[in-house]
Length: 426
Image (cartoon, rainbow, N blue to C red; front, side, top):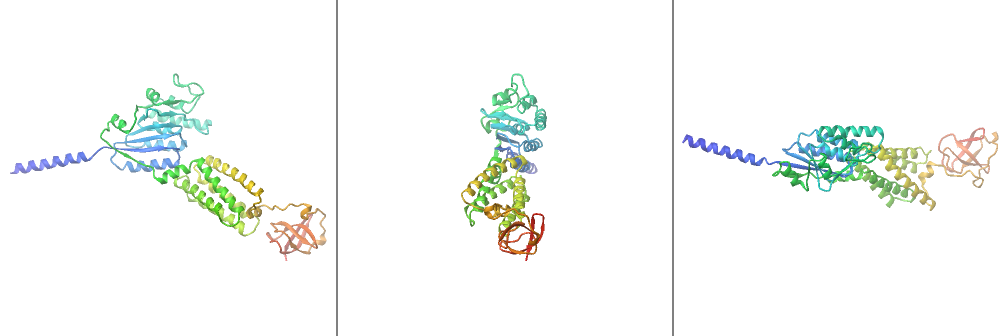
């Protein structure tokens, strides 16, 4: 009886052990690295790795399809991949160009699809300092993973000649078969299943990590070309709103475009709420300039804050300069066309005094007499602080002693300094 009980317990133990072993199925995660390499890409990969490393994972496949992007972000991604304790496999599904080369060779194993390519990793800007740093990152990673560092560096520097592989003055680009023959790739596979079988994960469960809508939106909007388009639409809409009475389509489109621009860059991690706060402050100052006449200082300050906010929202100063330059040039051309067609802006008038000091407008150069002191007249234009007043039927070019004085205000000539006439409110 005691022996039967022992055998029963042993049988149950073995059954539970086998069930537990069966339940521990191998799992392989697929994380996509696609499109432009930027801060949104890095943040997505970082978050994905943090989630995956908390699970029981046999391996990670990074599916790569990119023409490149920011090399600083690519280096951060490389560090994330190389610091992982999970076996890593890079799968170049279509292309790994520029920054994608460093990311590809960061994994322990490299697999390429039959028609894939890898190469053309020249940095932009291609200055000596940037190229030297970029080559050192590529060389160090290639050596660490046992790849031919000369071939990898030749993808970034056209002055490097690898016998039988490249010619002087040409960057190295490799097909999947060439990469395999030269030891840059370890295997050529058509799909994930071939990869799993080759590396001993035949029965593993394949789990794909998808980019959220938020990440996709952030990646697209943080692209400098799309940013240029959004800024152009936003600025043009703003100008149209300034030149047209009332709040209408121009203002609505401008708000939507600016919202997408700042929202996308904040989601991408390129910026924080500071850039948006500066931008909003700039808009408020511009509105104040339109509503409350002054010296133009709020308007000028508003323009500066708007530009600073837009620049700070981008992931790099170069991208910001590129995007905002295109937007400003196109907007300026459209504004000129609109003004020539008869549109006018109160904001522009408040920042710049546009009255011509011609004879037709009543301006005459003459010697100023001290007898004018204490005489009174009426401001026939806004004084900012310069403007025009009428005294004894004569139109005089004057300066205000008290800052801004509205048109129609009664003033008194307070003093004369050379040819300059100063006035104050009565």
